[in-house]
Every structure is written in structure tokens, then in C-alpha cells.
Length: 275
Image (tube, rainbow, N blue to C red):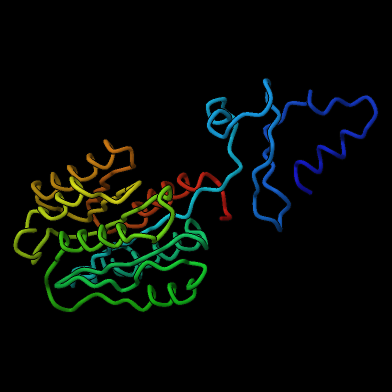
């Protein structure tokens, strides 16, 4: 039974004032139904959604579909088996992404994967999970690091931002998430972007709406490159989004870094599991 149905049942008991019983229960509909917006009785009569939010009344409307782009380092160094597990760096990364796809990405959300090493490839274009969940999981599982050297990290961030900026991809009010992981300094990005200049241009002139950015670094990176990433996440934060850099000294903590990402995505959904 839903909370509303329980309330209605107890209201029929003689002498019981259901409205006087304190509760933190929220009506999310029957288990087989998606949550729906319901009228909320508040002093002063009906109010707008914004007025209800200002009054502290939780919304029953699920969060709008979001877009999540995973931008993953698949350079040769990601084959290293220094994670203190049977998994390589890249395999641990894959495992974490698969878990997030299962637990924090809804069927109505869009997901994309960009791989970078000696070049940049969009291995999964933005796809609604509900239309291609099995194929997405299979494709992520099939990815393998590149055998040649090179880390075109800055170019991969440009590609990812362009994907997030695609018109008509998802409702404008939906969150856009860029999740990047690199285990080395940029090496090989195109001329004019060797210090992230093209990324800066996008973020300063036409950033994706509702952009959130998480930069995960593994191992020692040059201080100059860390400052560049910090300037990006600081800019995202100043524009109202969530921006952070998570720097891990070694590959052992790759899973822990992605756990932080999972918490951020769960908070973005606000507890809603249906679209």
C-alpha cells in the first residue's frame, strides 16, 4: 500500500485524528507505480511548487533526465596491476563505472563514454540507458587499454563537453555530468589545446547547461596541470554546479574515488528512482 492508502484506511477509525500523528513518511506511490506529484495540505491552502519548496515541503516530482559522460584514460599505463587486487587500473575503472550505471543511472538518463590515450574516441555516444542498457554494459566491459603511449587528456575533455552540449539531448533542466579519470599528464593534445585552452574557451563562452564536473587523477601529476583542472572545477562551482578534483596517490583508491562520484549522482537524483 502507498502512504496515502494507509492514511485513508486509518482515517476511517473512530476517534483517530490522522493529521495529528507526526510522520516523516513520503508518498512515492504504490511499489509498482512511478512516483507522482500529489497535493500536499499546508496552512494557507494550495501553493505553487516553488512556494512549497520554500516552505520546506519535499517535492514528489522526480529529477529530470540527466546526461553522464565518462571520460576514461585507456593509455598503456592503465594496464598496470598495482591496485592490490587481481584487477588492472583500467579493469578497476570499468568495474566502478558498471556499478554506477546499475545504481545511479536511471533508464531515462543518457550515458556516454569517451576513451583517450594516443587519440580520443567516443566509444559510446549519448544513449538513453533504457534503450540500450545491455549494449552499454557489454561495450564498457569490452574496452581495453591502448598499447601505444600518449595521453590526449585535454582533447578528450573538449570532446566530452561537445557531447554534453548537443542540442535536444535531454531537457534543459536536467543535470550534465562530466566524470574524468587520468593517471598521467597530458601528452599529445592538439596544438592550441596543450594547456587546456580549448577547454577554457568552451567553459568561458558556452558551457553545457547545469554542468557538473569531477576530475579524478591517479598518481603524481605536474602541479601546473592540477592547477588547470582546479580552474575548471572552480568555474563550474561558481556557475552553480558541483565541481571537484579527487587526487589519489596510487591506483589502490580508484574505487574509493568513484564512490564519491556515486554519492554525487545519487544526491542529484534526490532519491527518485523513476523518471
